[in-house]
Length: 222
Image 1 (cartoon, one colour):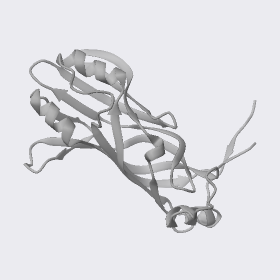
Image 2 (tube, one colour):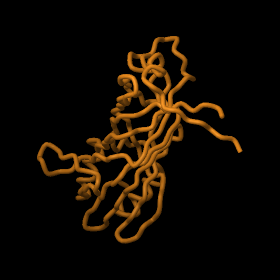
Image 3 (spheres, rainbow, N blue to C red):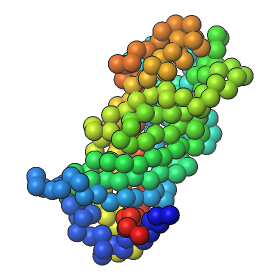
Image 4 (tube, helix red, strand yellow):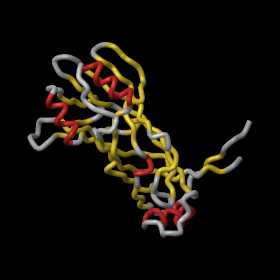
C-alpha cells in the first residue's frame, strides 16, 4: 500500500513560492508547480445577481439563511440578497498564477427559497476543482430529494490572492467575483418545485467569494 506523507510548511520553507503567489506571478512562472493548503478558518459568501433577484421576486420567492449560515441583507435592511457560510472543511492547491488546480470543500448551513407554492432548502454545499460542479443536499417541502449537482462554476476563471504569513503562521487566502450558473439538475429542480422555469443553464444566478487562513501542506512521495 502506498503511503503519502504530509508535513507542515514553515514560512521559511514556503517563502520563495508564496512570494510568487502574493506578488503576482511573473510571465515565466511555472503553472505546474503548486502548493496545497488546508483551510483553518474562513467565511464564504454567495450573493444573488440582479437577474436572480428579479426572477425570484417575480414569483414572490423569498430567501432565508439556514444556520449557521447568516443572511446578507439588501439596501432596505430586510430583503435577503445572499448568505455567508462558514466552512466545514476546505483543501486545495493553488498554482503560481493564483489559480486553483485541485481541491474540495463543503460549507455549513445553507439557504431556503420559498413562496406559497413550495419551500426549497439547499444545504451542505460542496464543490471540487477542477470539476467545477457544485453539489448540495436538496429538500423540497418535507421531502429530502438527495445530494445533487445543482450549480456549475468555472475554475479557470478563478484567481486567488495569497498573502504569506510570518514563519510558522497561516497564509491569508482570498477570492471573489466567482460566477455561478445552474446545472441541468438545478434548472429542473427549480422548475419542478415552483412550477415555472425560473432559470436556464446560461444564467449567472449568483457570485461567490471567500476568505480565510490556511496552512500550506505539500504532499511528498512516500
